[in-house]
Length: 147
Image (cartoon, rainbow, N blue to C red; front, top):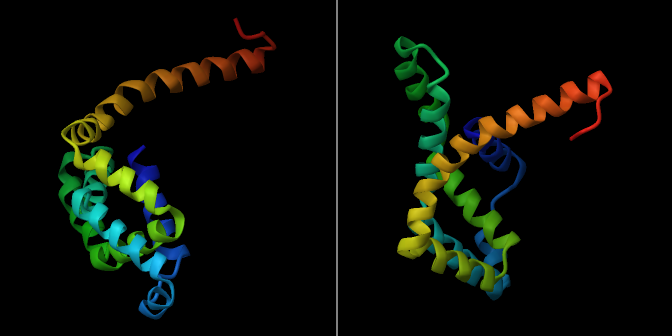
């Protein structure tokens, strides 16, 4: 899951050009969504997600190599540019109401608690899903129907 998050963030970074200031000036609604997206990024800094993903992935390396891996990966990301890109993509993707809802949710104590627990939930669920998928694949190869 962490690796997918990093790949997703890198793909976003490389695939989209940030919304320019002149485009925002020409579209007041877009400028308002950009401000909402910035507010959301203050509540949920992108750096936190990148750091967590890098640290998760580092666990796949021998302990002696983890520090070097983390250091190099963290240097590879231009935090300001990636955050600006994320803000712009959010402003282009979500409506005012959706951004407001995310701000309300992630700004609430419950939303923050859920966000903190989500990696634990995913870590507990993922092995079970992989086991079920593996079993289904073995059944398919053996010509057995699903129970």
